[in-house]
Amino acid sequence: MRIVILGGVAAGMSAAARARRADKDAEIVVFERTDVVSFGACGLPYYVGRWFDDPGYMIARSAAQHREAGIDVRLRHEALSLDAASKTVRVRNLDSGVETLEGYDRLMVATGARPALPPFPGIGLGKVHTLTRLEDGEAVRAGLARPDCRRVVVIGAGFIGMEFVEACVHLGKEVSLIQLDARVLVDAFDPEITALLEQELVDRGVNLRVGERVTALEGEAGELRTVVTDKGRYPADLAVVAVGFRPATAFLAGSGLGMLPNGAIVVDGQGRTNLPDVYAAGDCATVPSLLDGAPAYTPLATGANKLGRVVGDNLAGLGSHYPGSLGSACIKVLGLEAGRTGLSETDAARKGIACKTAFIKDKDHANYWPGQSDIAIKLVYDPASRRLLGGQVVGGQGAVLRADVLAAAIAGGLSVDRLGLLDLCYAPPFARTWDALNVAGNVAK
Image (cartoon, rainbow, N blue to C red):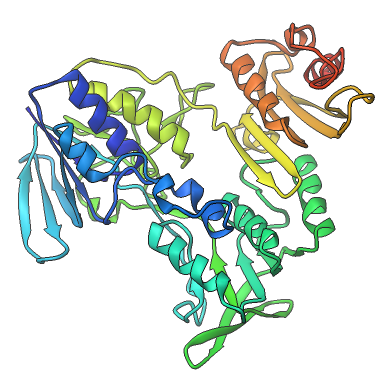
């Protein structure tokens, strides 16, 4: 059995490690186009913000460690094409330029995603960065450390953009955040939640510019000086472009793989594609929704690792199944935490799913314990069965853990009525007698 895996980050290496444990005799080869494997890019905003200094913390296991476990890891090798009929992939060694045809019995595509780069005039100027690779983190960290780097512009208010804003505020920079959409985190949270996050940004001195389009990046001597939009000009000593991702699947054109319009490979609950013996997982692929089974593109490390583990079992012939994703995600925005799971009201409208919602503002714990803070919760539920379909939470420290409770409740098929009476932990430092989640469930009519 020869197992070939294209891509050695979260999904690919989870699958390789799992397949090795399940099949001690299989030949397992991983081709990775960069210099590292098992790299967690989620840590980059905190690395550039200097909450920690050792980039090795973002690497779960080195290539050498995987090789010691019997996995043939080949760094700086890029996949060029797939021929499913002959069960081969063409791969190029980026150092020597040599191309080889690699046969497989079972193949996994885990090539991830690449940052979207809009064709702004000046996008190639110095001091303009993305923040997805280890080398990006090193370059941005060095740029922020320069004495003349005072004004930073962040283009895009998704998860990476918002986390990078926090890093810059932490370092004492003057920050402008420019977002094309009318609000931040538009794909993850509903307006009631994002309004609170936006107010936190403004209160902490961030120049928040929503509903504004970047039209050009201007510079001198090849380096960025100004970010130009349809509404203003913003001096910049450094900029990060964080406007989203595109699945890294262009090399698969003509292969016959089924994909979404954005290039994400469609897979089932076992990670199988429409081609025999070809699997996929990670940011290059969809994940099945736990709620309706539909393929969803949710490029998150959690789903990549979990579906990658399932694919590893199936590469070894075990027949494991992934129950489905709720798209659970969270973020820290300065003094606030926000978490979401399941369907947002926006998601439900897009899918044509009937829903009702409840939104409450409450307190996180008893008023006589120090540090009481506001917490807001939004529930999305089915109007007929009253089954919980989604939830969002925003508040101070610990708020995101309540989103985890909502994820478990949705997975268990609980109704908002059950949530209202759910036996949650209580002590004055942690909650009130009626936890905010109970209150939200009881308010849902």
